[in-house]
Length: 350
Image (cartoon, rainbow, N blue to C red; front, side):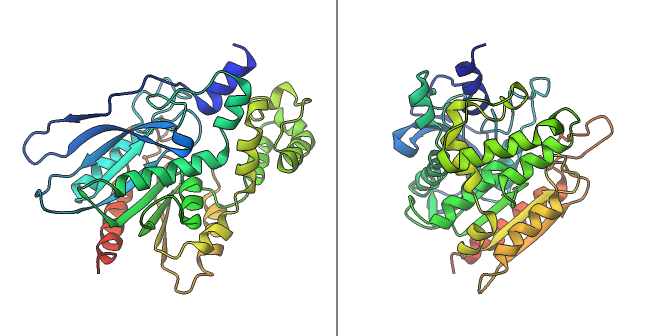
């Protein structure tokens, strides 16, 4: 596999064919209605997604949320090509199902270049522009705009949910407040980092005996990317998976993400929800960073909920499944998402 193809796999990933404009799955009585859709993201890139509507009377306007996936080759349902032996993580699909039971519609989508969304360009320069961090932020804003335009949806009662890196994207989009007809009434930051990305990467490298030998070089690469938006030519092979040359602008935008500052700018209710046994993030430190910004707001309306025994994906951690990929969302997590969003979106109607 050449370097260009490897870059596409790591960040723009598994592009597939586009679905038709809209294909609606007919439900049984009182079951949710699932509709496959496409819509334009940032710079007109075609994104493929799934709208899920709870059973409702024709004249009732529904509250709704968008659900944005985390990093890597993660699809709209929460499944990842990085974990081919775990075929059905389905964490995001499960969240959508729980919200439908609560009477809340949702839109979840495949990120640009992945699965059903528009294919990533093969040309290196075009790929570099395609994968700008700002484009992913713009895609999240475009998803909210598309949801708000649906005739079944009450645009004033819409929210954004982001998981992991997806939480970073929705927080930045919401704080910016552009690209959608109505600002989101609430945000859910699920397993979302609050500290600087370079700090987290350095901590992760420090956990491995081999990569600890490259910490100084890693620091040099980070500083170069932050200043120039270009990945330097002398990246050691050990660090190449982190620093593909086509991803300079993506990484520059990610390194510029300031969770506390952005959190302080969003005026609405925020739920910070994380798994107690998250192996990817230091939950206490990430939560504290987000709270640092949220507490600066006046008035401040936020809640932190750490789900007992739950993983990064809000699933149950077991001895056999230490990553918590399998099974259903932990009931406490599902209940908190349902009740909190219902309360905040109903309040937005008053």
